[in-house]
Length: 281
Picture 1 (cartoon, rainbow, N blue to C red):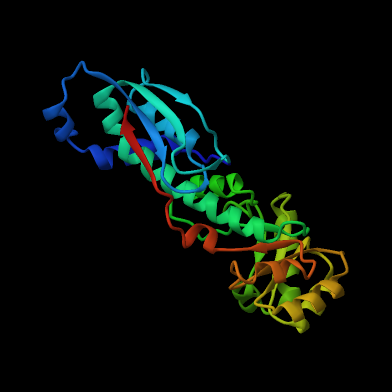
Picture 2: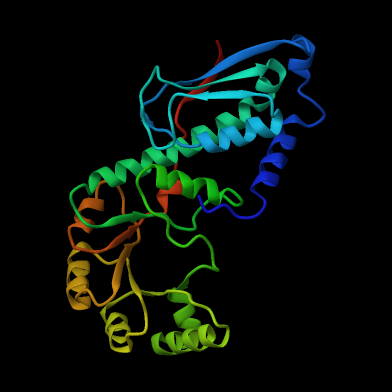
């Protein structure tokens, strides 16, 4: 996972949000010195993700908690599987329980959905990409889950790749102006970043091909027929990426066009969490 500065602090804030002045339910029902164990039970088939984050949370709550892992991030899981057992202070386990489950359930949901897309294009050369359509501040976790599901990460943020989209083109006064300004900017600031540009039609595509100063072309909202034509026009001179409204029912037909990458925003913004539970054992 590409882990930005502040992940530990973010988890600490998340715990503080949940705990507030104290876990008064547990404090009122459980003795301070009680020891116990709890197991992570799988209740739905899918792909596991979030184990590394669960370990971080347990460690922040109580460094004496011991976690025994039976399954790992990226593993296929079935109802009845036990992913891990955590042992130690019962109060600490209960304090960490909800946040651990929140991350595991959401990340496993993302990994599972990604695995469905990857499975749909099995045997073809296209790769499934995520996007920046992520939950604010949780991008690192959600993009890690995409990897666990067999997908690939697109740029992490605005800083690690140039992606000239339609608004940039329009505000810059056209394709060539946008590309020229980008190259000048990168040279002036001594930045080594790959350049991708979005095109909306064949006219823009021809301009990009003639210009030639990019690494990847994003073909936005092209049909499978026009995408096939576009990929042939590009002829392997640039990486190609399809985007725009691609779903599980259509993803294979897009991959069959020969496009290198298929970006799917739904991987991280239209997710149903996987059913998992933490139970005393």
